[in-house]
Image 1: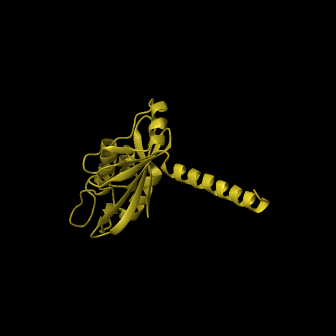
Image 2: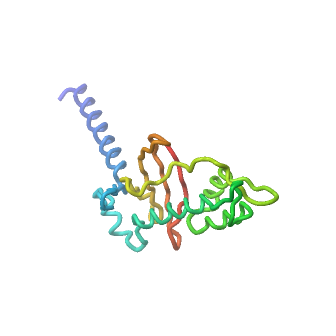
Image 3: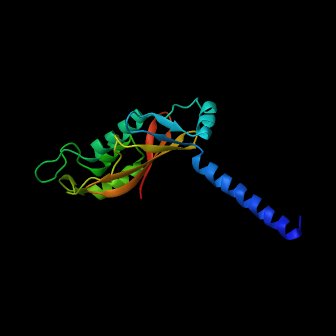
Length: 183
């Protein structure tokens, strides 16, 4: 083999190995959950990882829907005709209610955006709820580490159009939402 062909072959092999690493890296720790029956379509890498990490409770569809629904139930409070919140008087009280489903930092972003605290109580700012998890749609679950799973869902609603919402769930004695991002 000539020297030029040998160099070309080296580059082809190197690029091939890089492509394999990129493709396998994108599927490691990822599973897709079907909306129809919540069955999981697993990658082989996810199966291998979960056999060894089975000591930690697995994040289930029920966990995801319970936490995302409870988050939204807390966010959307009962109000009077002047938009004054009936059950909480301060942002701090509302933030404490979120502690069962998310971190204070995540809750703070939503409370600051949707609520205003006045001398006579807490008021919700009249607006639409944020684009959110739709439990009837498919989503991907990506294992970040032994105690963290990212849930990624592509959705469409008439109000929001196309959007992707990503939830990070972390286990520390119980599952909680530790990050929410939109794309």
